[in-house]
Image (cartoon, chains in turn orange, blue):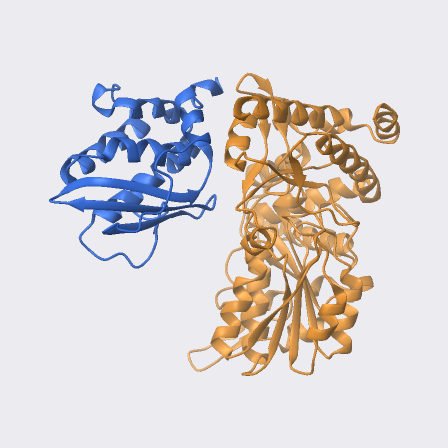
Length: 415
Length: 150
């Protein structure tokens, strides 16, 4: 593993980048914090914290409202974030980028607005066996309301979707295929370009849940030809409560508004309201302005590091972590897809994940334990829960060594 | 340190849970579920003349919830319904307040370390939540969950 360490340290100055994250410098229960829960929420670099602070200290005003200086500054900063998202996701225009609270709201917006208008009794929606609850429940609710049927693409033992089975699910009744780009519970990177193409051939649309992909790889919605793509700010080192929904212009234009209120209208009389153009038609009410500005800063930050560099470094970390954990007797990795993001989900024979999580926490190591909002995935692998170490570019091989040592301690206690 | 939580008795009962089997002639049953961690528990009681004659459980869960169920079954036998509910109250106080540890709880005091682990209180109380519903008057249709009430 020593050769791997030197490969890792050669091209990527992780210690320098860690300086950007003050939160990582603390001790937890007297031990240096080892934060391995970035798939739940990523830590925020100083530039993001500063951008939010600057907004509150200097530019704070409502957007799209006043003619005064502060309102113009805040409007400009907020809309600048949309422009940054356009570059980050490579959309055609900023008009097809809707600010939402996060991925969950992005999916709900589509299932409610597009779904109620376009899905009829007897139609079918296709999701996959590895979806987060947020990409299951909204579609289930829609199917129940409209009398449609939910179909599920199965996966294999590695946690990879079986595309031959997917092909069989597609038919003229299929209206939408909604799939995660990267699985939060397993780390699997799905071949979404191909999944979208197959959906289109069947005459269906495709929505991609990009919550776990955006922190790890370059997203190009045009190259993917996604109809909808949605992501959360807090997974990409930005604040919580903010994210983006990308949708193709023609689709968004044909959809009714999601919520009514201020900012999404052109004219209002008691007889009739006409709606604003994109993207504002879908943005009722005063938004999370500070969040949007913070998210813009975090996208800039990732771009400045280089998303390809981040992906390459994390891949090395994943290989290192996979090898380190594989040496622990009785440990089974859950999710061993050939294309995988830096997620290490595992179980240890005879020891419950919650006990593992507690013992690790007392050693300063933060992992997620539980079903990861993906209960069907747990059922499929016949485990009640897993322990998940999810990595980001600020993690190090030393931290993975700490995890391995921590798991040894766990085994000592429960042996 | 973490050893305060995982005391020897707790580790022993989690590895070798007592009264861990279904009971065919039980006259009261209830199911408990902790949706946050997926812990599941089925409790069987034989209550005669208001006295808990026998009690057993089956389920899957972490060391804390398994040991808690095991130790609970041991301490319930021979208790009246009222005494059992009182014990539940004391146990809950032990985990969630700074009240001094009393002898009344017997072996159950090994769970006092849970106080310092708020995220684990629900693991320790799952069996007791389930007991409460098993001793209730109403016929329980839905499993009791740690996410409702209290």
